[in-house]
Amino acid sequence: MISEADKFPAIHSKISKNWTLIIKVLFSIFKMIVVIIPLMMVLMLVLTLKSKEIIIEIKILIAVLTIAVTGLVVWSLIKQGQGKAGRKITQIVVDSQGIHDYSGQDLVRSLKYSELRPAPENGKYDIFIPRDQTDADYTVCFYLFDDAFNTIKLQAFTLNADGVIINGNELRKHFIKGIIMFRPDLKIDPGVLDLYKLENNNKPASTY
Image 1 (cartoon, rainbow, N blue to C red):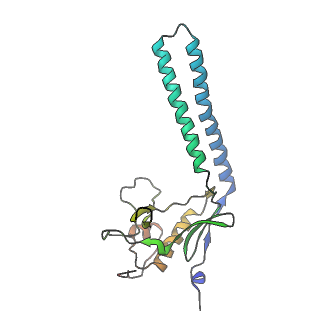
Image 2: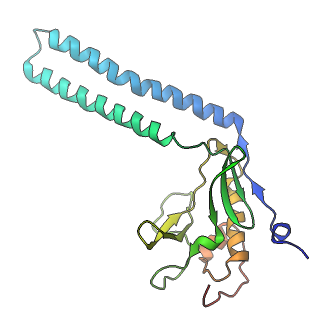
């Protein structure tokens, strides 16, 4: 008997080391520039305050701008540090159970097909692309149950890894194929099927 894993083999993410290195270097340079700007403004403020030729109104304006920019930079650095506090995702796997994020060999989180929910209030589609999207990189959305608020919420399908994924479209397509195979009760927007060149020959069930 053929198992689900054999019928639906897992696909692993492929990370481009070269592109990842380039982006990290560029980001490091950008971060250095962001840090240098408030330092230059503080230096300018000190020189301005010492000057006897500059009127008090200009000194106050420069002081306010320096405080605002410095505060914004400090806040952004703190938020960035908090975002990196979690474990780095080094690999993404799509298999017969769903999609899984790994840090090395350790599983960090999973989104299983069984967790997907029908659209609330008899929505037209359960898996769809929002019609108000204007960018070329279309984002597929679906519904999940939010335990914290005891309600169904809309979730965008994103791939987050510590590196540049070069087979992201293949991973997304495989995930949609998994929904077609393992969740035939869910209604998929034809636009999603067209985007990934897939066919859905399943007849949605009335209940799950």
